[in-house]
Length: 203
Image 1 (spheres, rainbow, N blue to C red):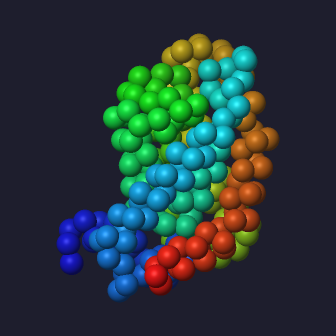
Image 2 (image 1 turned 90 degrees about the vertical axis):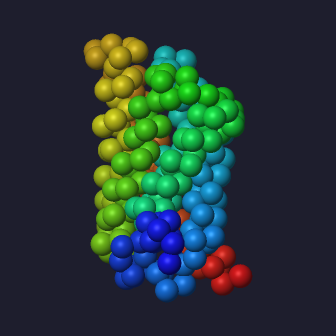
Image 3 (image 1 turned 135 degrees about the vertical axis):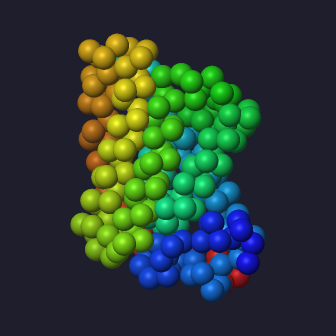
């Protein structure tokens, strides 16, 4: 078994996030395909973007995709999908919100939120691998923890551009209701995401 396949394979064979790609059936090619498909999902969700006139941070669908991927693929594949997405945007592919690209986006006001997708995917995936995703409330809690990680990285970064006194008003308050709705939607769609991944594995 190659080193890459070992790294990408989930730690636990049991639990929803692990059973969608069990170790005995996973292949390196399948792992890479899942990661690239995950990065594409984040890129598509980024194009669902609503600019806010008072904030440099738009409302997007990215966190929905990141949390759903973490719960579906597990922490390692979920983080790999986010890394692939960030790398694609950094090298110039128009995958960030509004179809923009380049390293300047990662260094700009929204860069902290983009980097926050990494711990979000890891936390959500790790909790799913430990069985939190076996019940709807547990899934909500896992995704809420992942969402908090995005803010934990994004808000201090944003404060460098808008000032600490404006960071909460510009970077948290406008997104609380929308993120709550995205968490509920992602949790509700998780069984369908498992089914899709299992079906693709059987092809």
